Length: 380
Ligand code: GMT
Image (cartoon, rainbow, N blue to C red):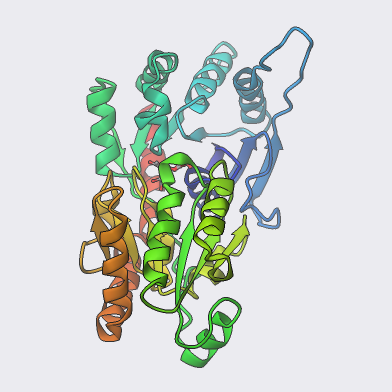
């Protein structure tokens, strides 16, 4: 198939899923065309079968808000025609599904079909999508999509309930490439690599996010401070975003600068995750929690919140530990108990990797997307 993919190219789960999906589809022999305002950050530009088309957004004095969604729709229609795309797959409903709908209409007037699939990722439904200024148009584009998928059962149900949508929505969970996201099984090699952040005998905690409010990064710092008061520990934070400076100030005020490493945006996330003992994901809401899955594939269980789709990914007590939002003391206490019980931690680490392989491996999930595309094309 020739597939056009549109996503947010910046740091964020939906862009990561879209990019990894494109890479996997190309590896299966499909032709993948990314259409976005900049190259998705995990795309190296070296993969066979992958093409990138930038969306130019012109600015005029009259435009206080340059209309990206319109420029995107034009480029989608153009790329679809020039490269004979079979379908578009847009990640994150706002505004991508609306642009895809326009592109489909533009090509229809030229006698060409261009079906589109919308994948719902989370805040496009639970936060931004519920904003009255976006709800009617988002709902319309979801209803008009030729196929809709959601990344968890939770999100599917939220979409049906909050958007009052009766159309079929297929849940296809997020996935991880278990050959890229891997543990370092050799103890000596792992210990050597951990020396970059932690000395022998120190626990290593990790957090990975876009530092938005919903991620509760200050809770990450407070949980870590609670852990570090009881056992020797270090914390690595990967990512960047609006709450980074608040987190940096909190680290400063708590006097734990020597134990906290802000790495900013990183490309080789899998190599860093594999060094950690535990991931901290105390989010207000996660429709899935991709960071926790990537960590699990590296044999790193999570201390996380029992919200949204997280319980579909993490079995509480088996592949991680789940808590109410904001209960930083309970999370710190549980983390210390786990980190000081090596046999229990080892069992949980093994179970986390096994779950990633058995339920969320790219080789199991990507074919579900291919089948879904085939169904959509058959229904035309
Ligand atoms: O969480 C964010 O701030 C970004 C958002 C995105 O679109 O990048 O993440 C959502 O999609 C991810 C990939 O499917 C999911 O793993 C996240 O759980 C989801 N975030 C929320 O639901 C808050």
